[in-house]
Picture 1: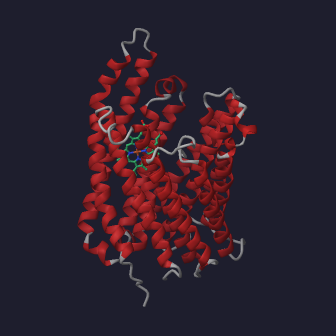
Picture 2: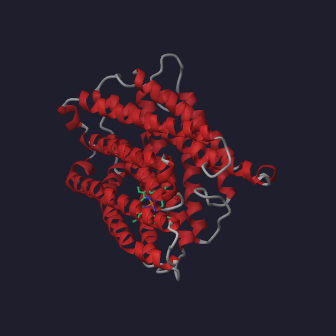
Length: 444
Ligand code: HEM
């Protein structure tokens, strides 16, 4: 069935893939700084490279998730989006905000906080754009009765994001900013919940897609999926516990938070695993690209879960805290889980487009390059992090520079595997962009 507002939705995906490509280039610039510190300082400093990379990646996830929710929502209701004008304004606001934010970084204009380092003024179009998103999602669903789990996930995700995004900007008011523990607690709580909110959008969309591939509604009404939803909801409210590890709060808050976020991952992995066994090889082959990206995400759920379990063990946590292990964990989750699922959504939309069918070979090679590079990339960061953690804790530790020098081999592996991963991504992204730009409706 063809979507009513396909053009605007394709633009969401196009914006998302452009942000991903841009972010990858600045990831490479950051990796080069690890190997040759100061190599690009005459052109651009690491203080600019990092936010250019991280913000591009955060907005890649958000805009692709919006594209997926709009696409699947229309397929689910069989109708168009309720307020097409608002959809266009939302897209416009996100284009303006993301492009201006990236340009402002080049000029050294900051003023925000970690992960949202842009000037707080840019929060206004993002906030308004999100309100429009919320209005359209709620407006397009006619009844709340007997809805499948993914609809609840989308509704909850959009509301939660707006709430926590607002919270993450409360520090702008002196009343919140002046009390350090309150300020940090709200800040880290909101970051944890923001990830929970976008995961609701992404996981919800993947449950929709899995049912679409299987040709039934087995998982979207299943008990296990609703458990996942309730845990996600609980997580959105309480998972911040492990983000405030260093703050003086009750230990049980952190333990509950950890247990919940891990159970959530286990349930999600289990749903994908059960689904994999339930679909036929014909269904797999017909949706081969989406299928492959979903399976890759499943493996990365286990890998990030394994690392998260290690991080929750206090004896190991002291070696990991504030090291590259944390960066490895964040990138493992945002590349391995989020980006793989988002790619599966993009290819669900365009897999039958000429540009994709003609470039199947390049996409397949790109896919496998990513799958081989990512574990090496991830491991190099985790090992470098442990080496640094060991140095931090040893009593007769040598000079800082000596430790940094000893990390160089791992950083070289990180930069090389990062480069091959970028090549893999570009081999996938270019045909996808072509397919979206030349999108032809297949409806007769
Ligand atoms: C889809 C692809 C990618 C995503 C979603 C992604 C996401 C992220 C995120 C969320 C962070 C912040 C981590 C933290 O502060 O804990 C980060 C940091 C970073 N990423 Fe990536 N990344 C991607 C690919 C790459 C690639 C291919 C490279 C290198 C070639 C790279 C290099 C870096 C570097 C150098 C940092 C900064 C770490 C620091 O502050 O020391 N990333 N990335």
